[in-house]
Length: 315
Image (cartoon, rainbow, N blue to C red; front, top):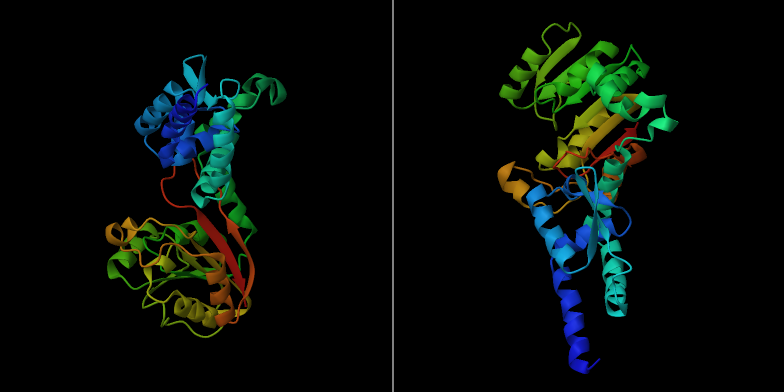
């Protein structure tokens, strides 16, 4: 092989890898055979976009394809790669491993793969592989999460801070003593009133989250669900939430992991693009609370937003 042939061969292998989306695809297919739909869910891209990139990778011999029934399954090629391609992929793979976006893709892919039906011979006989789908069809998505709320103390007084339309309060209301529903927007409170009509343990408060009209040490638990990325000074809100907690009380923060979707500032009025671990620690210390743990929530395969976390701060 001449020097010019070597250069041409390198360029031929390299060209398909110049698109970040194709790199993300290959990173997933390096460890797992996946369908177009599974890849689209994992990468949060339209199936048409994934199909287009897969076509390019397939034509350039970076991926192989096989059929299983009516589905096409893809995986990164191995035996068909020459030494140049294998060395190039090793460099590219290490770059992917250091990329937060690729790591997030891998987490989503793990959830997608986990939802595949298990071998029916190993789980409840013939119906076992379809049990998750059957359970969802019979009982809905709230079977586990809503039932587990029964573990809450039925005497608790809870504050739903930045309640929005009352989704969180509606889930908690059957299981706790009373709930203070708080929002600064009258329209949100009105929507919450409609949703929570029929519950007799709800109190509504129209006030700013930095100046709550609740007394010191008046609640056992407080919730800030997808609220803090909308407020100018999240630390002030956490301080005020700490003020109303009783000793031993818990503040649950549910929000987005730090991300780079700048468009959210214009399209949805987000003031903060998620939050890093150290930021949550800073809030906790400033408010005199103990951060007992921050957990990244399992991403829903069909969700299009950034990943979420839940943090529990204790007084």
